[in-house]
Image (cartoon, rainbow, N blue to C red; front, side, top):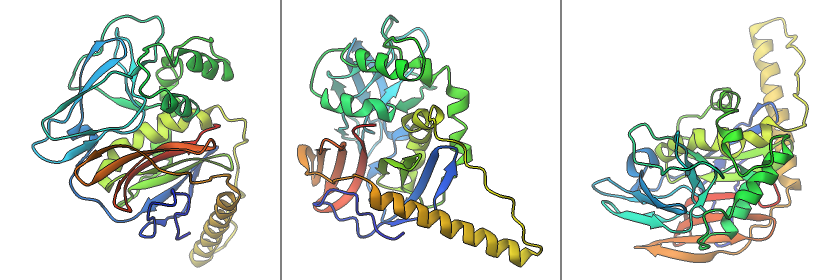
Length: 318
């Protein structure tokens, strides 16, 4: 598995390679390795929630002394006794600057109170089932705009049909966070492909391994974890290893890894994943932030010329 062919045609993905697939229940993760892009501050150090000005308006800051922050697409914040919010788009924030997002969305329908900057803040990424709707609502200033989609998301999983995303993200948090340990983030890994069952659900590429480490939990547990957690796909139980020697066990394990890689290659080949065209949204020096929405695949991509810097692409019909 050596090529990353599901990127938009205008993006050069030739320097990236795919690693050995890992599986936890219905969720399969394929590590991505490739060239690091310097000068991007990682989200936990270079991105801070400042405040919610009013419902639907969120301020984020880049407190770093140098380097630009790329805001993770569909990042969100949860605090007790405050109206939880998520963003509908990515953006650039220069060092020492603050950016107000006036098109953010509330994700907790009947909770009052404003989010505030805290040292213990943690962030999530919207579940993949909500991401296409959120992306298409970027630039729309309406704090309640995602409540109907969240209610449908909850109903889908047998929960009360309310615009309250914490019914999954916090009440199922203990189960969802198991994915960060059952699937191993590897040294040098700067991205991943995520499959739910045999369906490609997302392609996530970070500028460098440190950035990816910062978004790993938000992606594996909250962006793709809920779809896998509630999936009807049966847990696959592998037959016990039967070799009678250490060398035999190694050979049997290697054979299973090859079989799993071949299976995932088949999933990739069958994936209805048209790459779509890039529509530029904004620039920062030589960096360009663009949106992709082919109807089947959506997301946002940051490039420097043809070189890929960041990508968050997902199945729009998840």
